[in-house]
Length: 170
Image (cartoon, rainbow, N blue to C red; front, side, top):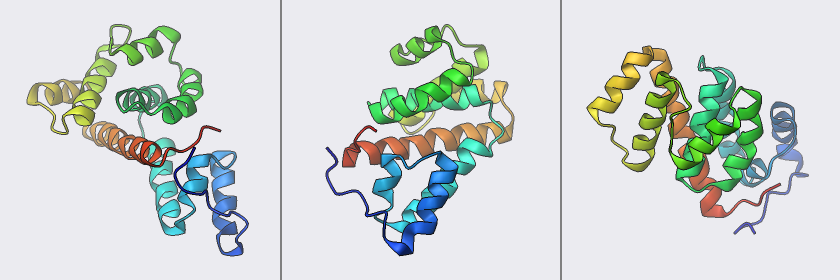
């Protein structure tokens, strides 16, 4: 059970933002119901995560694998459950999903493996070793590296928010 109340989404001053979230997210997930307790935070969050998920040049499969891996590392079940169907639709198969859960990246291509190692170090250690970065640099251009880094950073933020407040699953 969430540690604080979800926002009253019937408040007239936030209705336009609620409607925008419903349009862009095909509904109003509990995460956004909580974020709406602070409309400026909800609005900024929506803009940032929309840029990460819908406007980056990363392959959707890679993006979703990064999100799933962050969720596993941070024990963020809500995040994992929300993104699993998206990952499967983007082309992840069951072997790859199980590998992400176990930290076994053998079913991934070399670039994906490099990105997962980078994700693990960013999430667990904060600082990324030179060798890990070199592998990412060999596989991706500057834009992709920025987008991989921003995706991992953003979803670490999401999982920390979800777990600290204990957002309920839908």
